[in-house]
Length: 298
Image 1 (cartoon, rainbow, N blue to C red):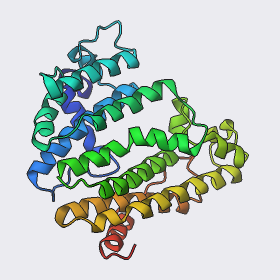
Image 2: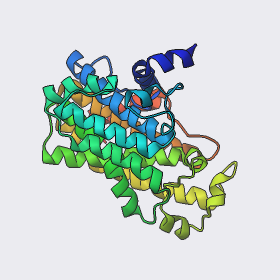
Image 3: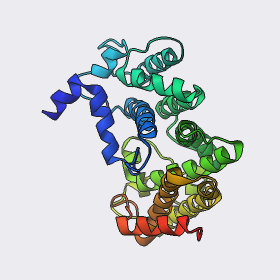
């Protein structure tokens, strides 16, 4: 039944995934107008990731909506090109896909630029072509496409963008992306992707085969601890963003920073062994971290 619904209503199938994300997409305490626009942005971001990961709803409905033939529907680069063409219609025409038609009023109401959306598409295009990163700087450049646009869009929707806030937001979003990569080392390897920089694998004497083990040895744990500390430093760099805003937006941003810190703590609590499965923080731990941030203690 679920597959049938997804095939007939790909818009609903994509939006329903919000409930399973690591962070609340559009929490109840935000103003309704913000929630509506954040869900529209989420629909775009979720669909482009699903295209890039080959996780589209069964039945090929999304491909048909984008005007892609059944023959080409398995080619992710073709789908991403078609999705980019439809995105551009958001800004100068009438898009085909219902998620992009949902996005169009948000873009116009909030005067959102095209660049963050193009960045998310470029990140997923890069995932089809680049599966290893030689240096940490290479990984940061990828995060500039795959993660930072999301924070910039949140600031755009809420009308709070400034150069300094964007800089802090970028640090938070990059940190969250790095943490997600640490949690998903085994899953990413299954997709033939390794986001741990090759220079760091070499530094800690880790082979890719070590990442496929049931549990991590000492070298892998040391590597994960090193990358986790980098993520924590980025979160600390970005944390002043929370104190620069007010009201319900402050609570939302505190939740993002707290989620990242709690995830790093969960990885540390697992002795940096991420291979059996992603270490996840509990709700109590997350709420405690939110309180620390809101009190200005962290």
